[in-house]
Image 1 (cartoon, rainbow, N blue to C red):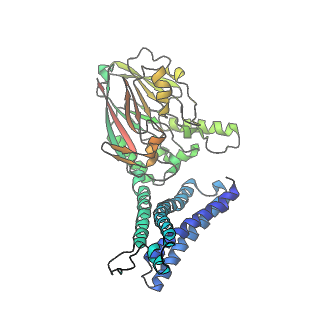
Image 2: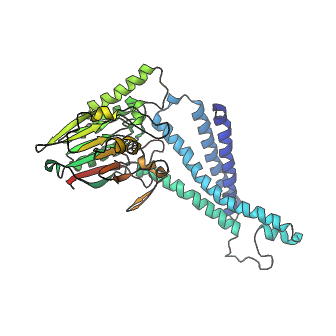
Image 3: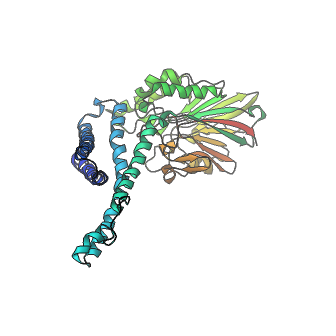
Length: 427
């Protein structure tokens, strides 16, 4: 779809949704005074005009004329209300479809009965004062249905975006050396610093992480959305992430800047180098298709880190696991940092059966869903076989972290930002 279509067709479709939803508002407010109805109409169409003008202006402005955070919030202010109105439209359609079929049926009735048939009322028994006409009931239901996602997604921005939760996971490993029994690992993933809007809350998440006192920390990619400079304002926060055995990290698909236009290939390469430099500036040991041997209480295990290796449609493949693995063969336990969970089924399980645990992120759990006790649902599960939590196959395990940050929608509903604390134990 070209730029002209975005400027005219999309606003026209949005306006059509508004016209349709306003019919429901008119229906349930028809008993109000004329001045009240006028006020409702002015407020409703005022917000509509503002949203449509804002949309057109954003399409006309150069991408970098306003900050990314501002653009994200403005888009959310447009998308969330219309997403909610869409659900209201679905309910209104139920009434309109029913009305259409009743109109067809009414053609077979006497003229004086046709209106009663179309309106689904009893022409013999008059309606009482406490009876709600069916059409009015459906209009009210439509507005309630539309209000639920509006309130939910708005609350997801206000509260859910930084409602960090610590998830504790016990990892029994058959070949774990006794020196590592009881070792704790903290994992965070998908920081997406370019999306943050509350620096105090981000700092609070890091403080919560540090309160867990992990022995080692893993970060599994997507430090930025696209540009390395996005993290500059947060380096003084994330450099507080420390652990006795160190902080180890790797790159995610967004860290390569593949989702924006660059003036040259050199500029794109330099951006990746700047992201890597940011990891080092924070004191994180970034693993670029390499490994590190962890030594604790006289025992050793291998830590492997690869660049992004995704195996979904149009996924980015930048890493080399064979290269990263080389030199770890003799160690009894191997832990892998790999951003994309699709890597597990595609390469890790079939080709590297002695890699005990893969730590991933990437999916964000779609930032929306249900995650209460044993009940889990998210749109992410229709795109990723492994999308959140722990997965096992034989002696191998995959853990998919739900992410620390967010991208696109600046919030979270149901799937909250995660700090994972693992305890390694002898199986």
